[in-house]
Length: 176
Image 1 (cartoon, one colour):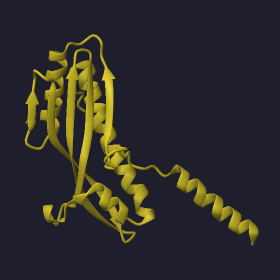
Image 2 (cartoon, helix red, strand yellow):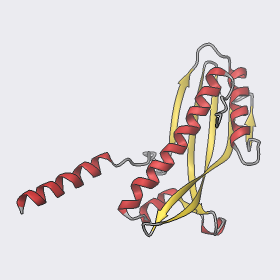
Image 3 (cartoon, one colour):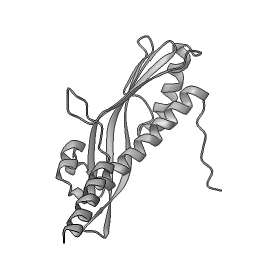
């Protein structure tokens, strides 16, 4: 009997250690992704144009909500859809929306993704809630799937941004 409890406890401990969590800002306790990247060979003007191109391709309205080339600031609302399982068999589409801010200086840029919100696509904006609130209400078994999907989408967005900022063009994925 002790062996069964030991194995069960070990499995639960390993699962808890391997479970990812969303990055929280220390001050606001809100989900925030941020990174500063140095590209010494590029000027502020070049980085600004590349960041603007990324914002235009990723935002729903195809334009930044804030664009100040003299300060090197860009901001837009960006979203992606994730499929969440509920009741162990049903899938629902949930739309995650967030504010993307890019600050640019000569030879470097910083992105900040924050103010994450989520809502059920079928129900619409009336069901919108903060990502933190939504996460806290999930069952433990659903949190891992949720975090993995959000991380995957954000990682894909940041990879596209880094590639565009470094190389100057987005590589389109070919389905063939």
